[in-house]
Amino acid sequence: MSDGVEVLRALHLRRPPGEPLILPGPWDAASARALAEAGFEALATPSAGVAAALGYADGETPADEMFAAVARITRAVDVPVTADVEDGYGLAPKELVERLLAAGAVGCNIEDSTRGVLKDPREHAGYLAEFCAAAAGRIFLNARVDTFVHGDGDPGRAVEQAVERAALYLAAGAECVYPIMAPVAVLPLLRSGIEGPLNALALLTPDGPSPAALGELGATRITFGPQLQRRATAAAAELAAGLR
Image 1 (tube, helix red, strand yellow):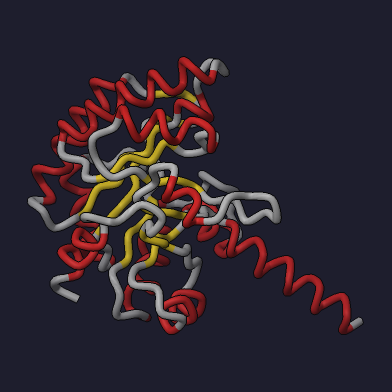
Image 2 (spheres, rainbow, N blue to C red):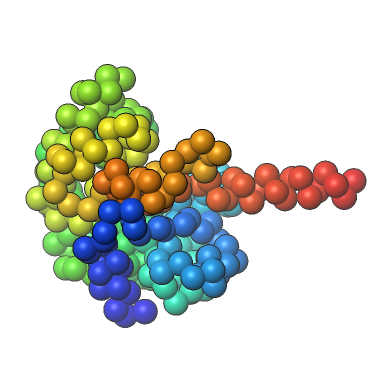
């Protein structure tokens, strides 16, 4: 859909508290079609879920296979798709933009760590600025911030670093910030310190806060990582056990 990026962009704007944008994560064309038919307005591929569907460990999917999987997903649905492209696979910003557009994606996540090590935030902001210049508004960039998973373990410091990194990434052209695995308790702090839209990861557990509750705490949009794919795999295993 040629105007998909504008649709995705508009879905992030002026959202009232308690009504965040919910972006479930398809891992293949069939799951994407099921989610779109359920009425979701946009979808967000999880790299770990796609990796598992392709038979790889998280972080080990070759770039060509990831982009091919994203292309199959985008062809299957008429809603905007934003793709998790990990740390960019070592591609130059212009090439990453071209690969995303060729796959039909209108948004993406880019991580600020590589193999468990945080990148220098200013160098990473420079990469994001080049990416945004090459994208020229055609891709909605969600800048992932990994201080809560690859920081020094101090929650207060992780919040401070996340806010600092978010400011750099938003100034570089990112349109949303994703401090992955941020504890629910710090969402209000992140919301008060981050100027742009805020992505929160919802945990599909019985005692986890609902997407609406995360929205009340400051989240603009909600994603689920590979949890839907893992639940589907668990359901298949349970069904298989019953067939024996």
